[in-house]
Image (cartoon, rainbow, N blue to C red; front, side):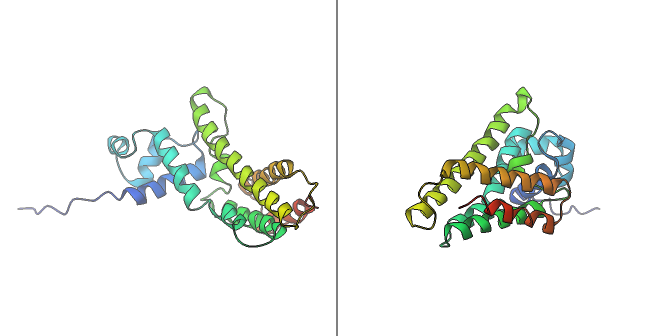
Length: 196
């Protein structure tokens, strides 16, 4: 007589973490259902029961990323440092995030959906909106620096915020291309020179 083992339990939080790692490493378009099911050790029907669809799983993975791995660059903007130190710390945190990516480097919010297919447009918009909110947070920090006398009052905070968002994207792309920490951190000083 054989004894039955204890049924396996499904840890959805752990599975979502693994799903996030796969999407972060491979992007939405580069990830197949088989990649996701292999990463979390379940069958396709169980995956659909747990997440609904690949798109729904990606959206949840993005939410998890924003609240965990990707939170560092924005968290430092809220810390009580002067504006220049905040921007510098944000860029350093961006380097940390880009280098912590599984296997290939980069940022899920920047590299998660690169191709412009009609079927991925809603996800591209999702990531674009998050990046816009990031630029808005940077703009708010620069405006606070102006109000507190840390920065000249004639700077264009909106343009600088877009510029620093572009620097963050460059860091992510360079990390994906294999740049070292030293190479990525070397981008920070020239970027800071844009801040009067």
